[in-house]
Length: 458
Image (cartoon, rainbow, N blue to C red; front, side, top):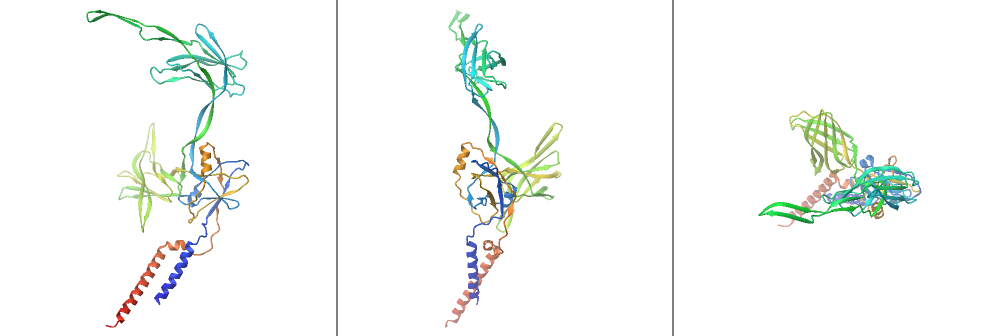
């Protein structure tokens, strides 16, 4: 009888396994349209993820799928959102030297015209291979070659190589639209003392009575190889990883009088966090704190420490200093705990908790006239393997992405009510039933063997 029960149970278990391993494809619980301006031109779209995606998506982002209106899966590159900074580049404003004339005893005037299509000049560089000099210049500008306006008065170019690798050959110009320039060097030469040419010493015994040194002064003119005009152009380039502030879903503060600690239980929306910052009304303090997460080990849960820091604040007269954050390696956990070690001090007044961490975005190449949606929220999805080489090459070449967005979230229709055999096979109940059946079958087999042994003739 028991053998029949075992056979029936085995049959149903085998059906469960077959159903659990059947590949019906992953189901995605949520979808959102990608909102972008379709200008009919090629572009590189960047879709930032938000708290709704973080809350429902897999911890390693394996369940993110971009789908077009035909249901075709679109390759994307997942990357952290970088910050940006503005860099000023100098680009040449093409020019031509028109003339050089001497003025006064050793002064010179150089006339330079910008090319017809050249951008207005923001400055110039006096190119010379000369070393150890200092000269003062004046710059005048004109549009007709007759009426001249002084732009720069008595600015210096110099090179102090004899003492240190310090020099400057650049001259900034005020904002102007002049096309002709005069560079005036009132004194275009400098006197240099050469090495000692002759040394005469008069000795009386071993004592030096007189010393005569003969040196020579050398007049060295400024030698200009060329004058380069340039204009400034600002560019926005990628910088280090950008940090975002994420509000927590909730927090609860409690006191552990026995261990003299404050416990702050924090719930989040599983955003990518690399730090937690406390908002407190306590003006002056210094406390050690640590951030922990619950770690499941078998049937037990223990707390794992992610990071430690000293929280401190000092507000006194002109001093206003605060450091109330604890950093840790990036996590996407639903629950955190902060422990503040108060020792014999009163607990801090905690007003709020803010999470900080990076942000993520999806980069992909859209087709004009096409619609896209992001699907996420699947426990069965496998990590995608996409060809992202074209996107990476565009980034390396300096192409900038165009920001897109995500529309309202739509929940997928609920699945038909049928047993989730995948969860069943991983449940404690299934393991208990399987072990019970195995013990039952084994006991019945031992009983039958023992009975047969007992029935043998003695």
